[in-house]
Image (cartoon, rainbow, N blue to C red; front, side, top):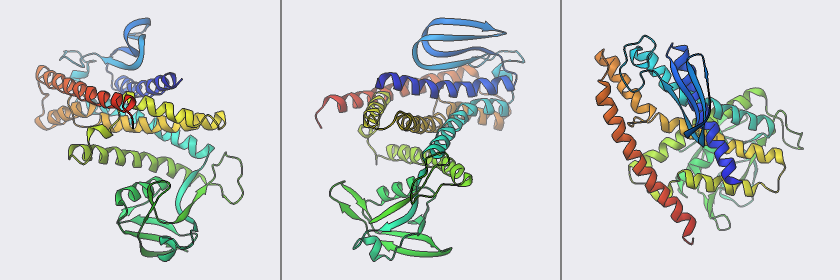
Length: 356
């Protein structure tokens, strides 16, 4: 079941991404030769107008093939003939649709279930939080100088602090206050904590819960929007740590590792209702969609971000980089990405078969 769910999630994310390229290409007058769902041999295909719509054997990925995408073609409807700003729009549209998908998913989750907020609900007696002067109702706004908008921001900064003293800024009855709190290591969870329970907002369409107020539409939209920002930030920071050696490749997960996570998440939700299980899997889909959006915009050859770099050169030089040279660079980048993916896959397999 986990494999089926993983295929559905990956399929949705990639199809939405390619639909972004497709829609932008059509809007800019670029001829789309084929829009495919899946990869490999063709199972079904139908030509509508000038575009072939196909369903392929392997239910992973998909593509949007545009005229003049990989070769300079003297045709007013080719990608290669379009001005730099339209090329950039088409290239960015795929990642943009991934962010839109993630936003919609996070919004649905916030509307249907509600969300946790970085606000003190109650303070544990004798805890560092009590010693620092925090009381129920305090809304955390900054941690060590970093703005805190949602609960995930708070948890991320807690993990980054790794037990070091934390400077907190918070609002109490509209007044800005500051304090310093020293986290303690909770032996049961093996995580650093400060000793207070966080508050929550109930979803607009969720069943009423005693003691938990419903979020308004502004708070709900803000939660979905800031969730996108959080996952973008977390993905970029993770990549920077990988490049700088602060994160090793063994701590990363590729498709195999993600399928495992999806399977574990699905099993963990077997005791809850079908609706909540679906929402949980959708939340995971939203995270992966935002992650893919960020990854595709990285300035690396063979990715949309790498192609954007060449479009930027074109805008600066007032003429495009020769397609043959660009193609060689993207090919080399693609090979390097495949090699990197193999290393990550080997790491994922080792995690599965080696004892923990």
